[in-house]
Image 1: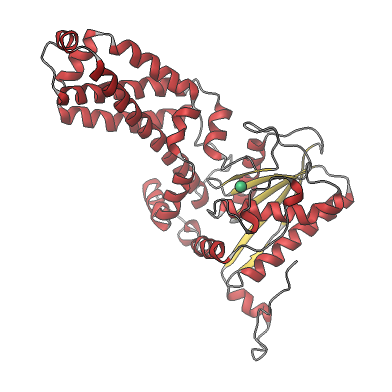
Image 2: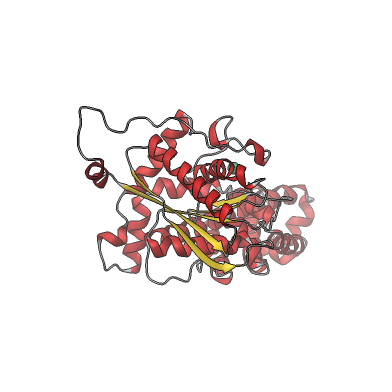
Length: 396
Ligand SMILES: [Zn+2]
């Protein structure tokens, strides 16, 4: 533990309570979703929470930190749990209590998707992280390691990437986790993010909003943060991760490339029609997958909440960008393949002699058709898989 710096200068005898009340509030809720009977383990969690609380209050005295802990007896304390379910639970609690962030802690193993095992899963779209103490070693070691893990998770929720130093060092093993402060560079990033968070939530500002005005205002309260969250998900990798969607796309394109009709249609469409068609298709395909996969339903809580609307915007934006990248990929690939086809054959198919510009138009048409087929294929994707792809920052 680091020594606590003085929060108030000695010549300022103001009561700390009064000073703290005027500071912007940041609430990080801890949720224990399992029916834990082991009192030593509960103490260890409590100790970890206290360490994180002290460290953050010392590092960022600009804010008044609150870290409430709630217990829910929802799962037995053994057997692996799905992080996705726990993320949704953490989100519900976060919205219910109006917290800014929530950390779900369980003694159970977490069911991994990509890795052999996972210590935790942060989701900056939801501003929730799930942590497991199953692999953190003996109970006496848990406070320090869990606190280190919590800081790593919070770092991801606050937009930090991995680093050589501080809590953002990727934990190679549970032994390497420790409760160390963020480096100065990391603190600057965290501070910028927290200042936005501490701003009044929209729904507290005005009780009645229209659907459009609420979404509009939510977006403009933090456009940069929303954009960064979307970018952090690396949406260009989405076509690769959504295997069934991409397979449906590839099959349709393959057959269309060998059909005379597609050449005839593609090369005869005007450029404005192709551009408009591509834009409408991309937005439509995103909405189709978003609705079909119930991606908007990330919490059972009804009513408008800024955090929830923001999460949906990040998910929708990630999916939309993923589909834009899929279109670009198809456009370039079909153009290159079509350029390899013998001129005479293709001109015969298209009914006109083809220049480079016709090939571009044909490629745009094919990419648009491919994205349409992909949207249908996207709904063949397992709902859980696609949600995990869009919501997980990583498996730590
Ligand atoms: Zn990490």
